Image 1: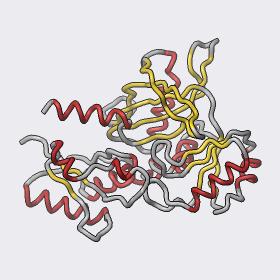
Image 2: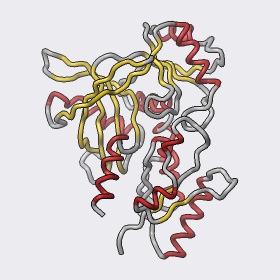
Image 3: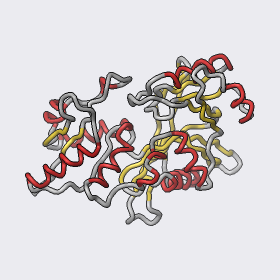
Image 4: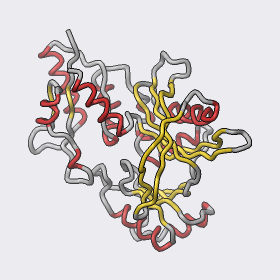
Length: 307
């Protein structure tokens, strides 16, 4: 009978990056069959959305097979929506928040016995809790201060002084995050050194270890106005022994945060050991239960051009 695609647009408020949310018209023009948006004057509600989709199933005699998040802000509620639709192909609901909140994410990964960066949650609106946290964690400058539910490099700051760290932490705690939700705390993290990589994976119960690496990219980032910006990346061989530690670590991260179905994108740092001729001691920057940003546009373009 063919494939039926429905897009769900939560109608974000005027937040950072909201101009990049696709409109219903653009999605329909591209080839999406139907688009769900909250009724006029109503905020997005996951239960109401599920009710609507189940009604569509009955009225149009179709069956939804899965829910795929196409942006970071959709990661947490995609699995919840899949469960409400009665689907079994969704990630661990008990770890849903750990796949979105960077603090809970680090805790879940650490609980799995994997290395994570030193971090602390800070709640003072004036940033006054920063000095004690830096002392307690025994951090040296620079340090990283970020919003807990960010996207890309939005609200992620590399701070070279106590004054800057205090200012950025207070700024985050007082503000609304890039996803349009109030940031109740900021994250203070150690600044990781080494080479940065993006490891893309796909999870399925049919794979030997539950998750499998598809490709690895080495980033080349430069510091611009206190933020690390990726200028270009190089694909490396995931089957090479040089990157074996990265593969094992990224797979462990995915299992730690409950990714069981679909795509995953792990960003990590690692140092090169010249004696061993391989990268060692990987440590997570973050993990996303979704396709990598650039690949979505490429794959969408390929799908559209292929009819």
